[in-house]
Image (tube, rainbow, N blue to C red; front, side):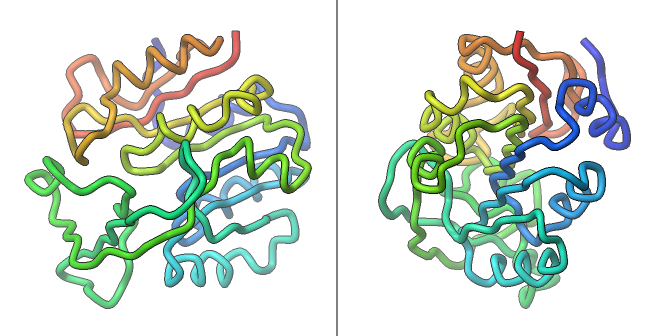
Length: 219
């Protein structure tokens, strides 16, 4: 199993994608990773999802000049409707949104980082399959998930569209960072049951932090 560093990730993924891939980024935050994806794949179509209005405004502002980016102010999930979202902050920067917000109530991560969750909001949720039907998207080449414990729910809401995915990159957790979230082994097992194999990760067999990222490709 290859242990990758951040600068190695996109070149490795490129080996498995067409020159003009369709990319879905769940948990786009302020668009910093979106801009990297757009720069690496200038011909890509990138669909980004960010449900927190204040953060979505930053995403719009930071990617407005990139015509290949589409933005959606909703959260991906396994159901369509409304859910409570726990908004995160850093105590040192209470005026700025932080990227650790989740559809799951924070739990053990409160002992491992200084992120706080002073407020909740209600956000709209949809499934990838429902979104794809609505927007006439018939395939995804690359699915990027950074949903703070909600990754399994997202892929379980995409059983139809998931069959078209060539590469899946997802955050994984080794502790119950958020309540009722699946841990690494459960998420890995489910993804592999859908015809993927894990080819790289950014953590060792004895992880030193409470989360990491794993890269899967279709067999």
